[in-house]
Length: 45
Image (tube, rainbow, N blue to C red):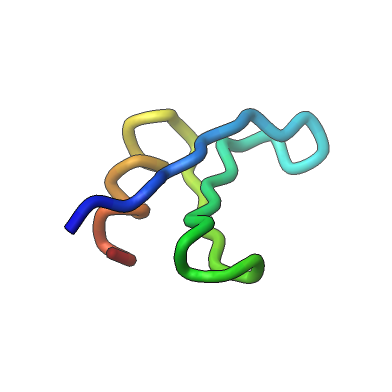
């Protein structure tokens, strides 16, 4: 299966915020680096 992973920088949180749209509007994770955020998203999936 394929899922969409959206990674955006948050000035407020000073981190990369990840949303997984197919999992619902409240499914989010984050990371201090882009790579960490992507890794955390993969763990959620």
